[in-house]
Image 1 (tube, rainbow, N blue to C red):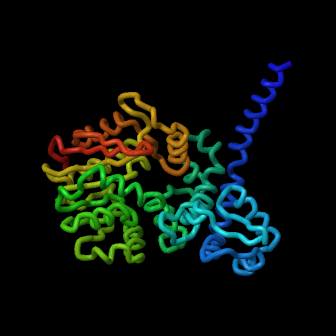
Image 2: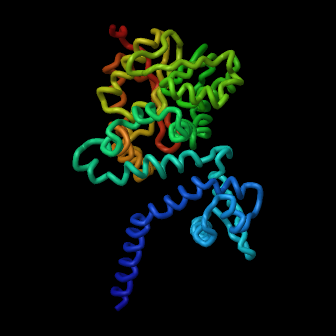
Length: 357
């Protein structure tokens, strides 16, 4: 009898685990709606009752109340005995302009990413990115076509900065940017890492290099104004050329967006730009370690990132050994690999042969 009871308990736990994963989209969509309505911004100054929030957000009071109770149960809001809502610590990350805000990231996930992921089956069946199947073009081509829209602005902001401020500090602690005169952030988005490096090293000069519409977004925010004398903004494509002659180049979370052929093209263009004494940093979440040490590896997180790349782009997560091979094919040798938290690695590469034509 006891074995039967234990078996039933185990089965119930298994069912709960399956259902938790299966219904996860419901909570993510609730979070998206709260972000879209900017409810956290409305509550940021203190507690608010549902009637006030419904008027401010032009929503149905009862429906909004039920949504907020769900998000309160999930830990983002707190409801007091009087039915008023306030933000929790983690809920403050939903404020659109809060430090380390996830607001733009949540909107990105709830709009473009949500739509593409609903076509995961077709993606697996065809081997084509689901985003391409939905929109008839790749993610970055799509964003360039809607460059002046809020969607493009929010997506650039999310891909460039959500959760990366602390990552930038970790990179700068692990690698001495101050040993160089100039740095080019290749595909640097809104320049979070570059600006952190310029702020830490007063003699360092920097270049933000990205697609013209991304550079325009970075310029419009005024984020680079404080470093205008030391920060150059250059629009272009890393599939065509990279600004030459600086001594440090950075590719952070770039190569994973592309298949091997296009990743190699990016690296070859970097090789043409990097002088013989220069350095290239490839900063990526890696799929596995050469030494097999996975003691700190969150396998689920890495696997989710990898499948997300399959859905959204032609890219994938690569092992350090695979990145070494790509770098070697482009004329770089790996000097060292620096481990950061959450599977990020800084791969420092140096030129090993003359750049091609």
